[in-house]
Image (cartoon, rainbow, N blue to C red; front, side, top):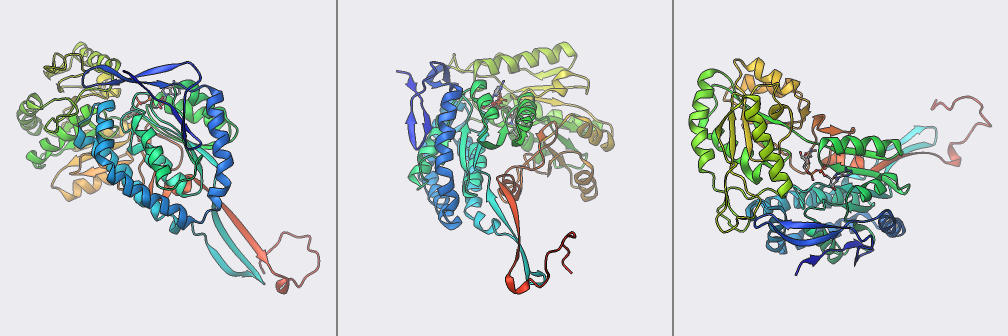
Length: 499
Ligand code: NAD
């Protein structure tokens, strides 16, 4: 029996009424696990109306009490970790240990949100003029929305809604229609944690629901994470409608490997960062750039057998290195890129296209693929593949490697592997990428720093989570106060000065 998902509006599960549905697959065996309703503009409007009604009371609830809901929610996430990880792995395809990492990195932002009362404090200038005090305060925006991708169905929704709600906003979450089970469960747990109804609403859907969010006059801000073309579209239309918008897009993350790098560490890092989660991470390493012929030869000698030996398995196999891709369409797209790479003249040294998982023949599996002698004009280098495919581009010198990363249109993450402090320092300073790892392959900053890419990986001024998350979901008000004891002059017609 295929389960039918709902929306979550006003603290309750609400059946979809648009008559449109999408299938939610279980990638490990290719079966349809559930149907998810795709909201119409009027269903989205119902959610916004609920949120708008509930928000003023929530904003007036003192910040410490709001933080307590976050604290309870952390407890519930830990209590339900196994259940959430199993659900996540079944709908996404990643392994259960990796699914726990997805939940954990979201949970850490909820932990950060517990401390948000501290960050909502304003500034105060006592005696800025005769009898005059000036102070500033941060206030919630009202109703805000988050539109999130399939690849981190726990982490990214929490990155969005936890800071927004802790700041006093009401939230509309439009999760990916490919794996909506965990976001719906998170909303239930937030209610169990003490969140009032209407403050976190989950509206499932596709472009129709997204367009309704972009055009709804009562939504003040939108945080988006997904592919770059959609990010650009959402940024342009949301801004044109006068909303505050931040959009995080696709990536092509390079790992520069210097001749002095520890090769054991480098190969381990490339395996995990290139092939973990079947390469479906925005911070996955998809390009390795060994510097110098000797480095390249040594890298390939060690890497090829490791890629060939990677253990692929169903999401329920805790010993698997990675699982299937999210859908058949994703599998076909990634295989298509491997075919393209061969046509473009790259050398496919490990071919995982024919991989079949015994007992799970209809699952969306693909073995690891490794290309050598990729060049910067090839589409397999310029475009995001988002699968277990690693490209090796050989560079003669460090400067060539740096130029590659700098000239790429994406600028999400990058890493350098070296023992040379000078080279690492020069790289960190000059590279045109938002998040940099030094001997760290996936440099996702912790929750109290901010996360965001440069160039066509990010649109908008502020990053997500950390201090920028608070700035994005609040607006500053500045108050200048003069008390009767300070008022000595009569009417003044000149620009006020604090003399
Ligand atoms: P996607 O762009 O297909 O979907 C993201 C969201 O946009 C979903 O909620 C989806 O329903 C909605 N959407 C899809 N098509 C739309 C359209 N035509 N109009 C309006 N809305 C639409 O992305 P995805 O496949 O779910 O996720 C993978 C992508 O996300 C990759 O490109 C990856 O690099 C990127 N990503 C980026 C980051 C980051 O922080 N930079 C993090 C995770 C994922």
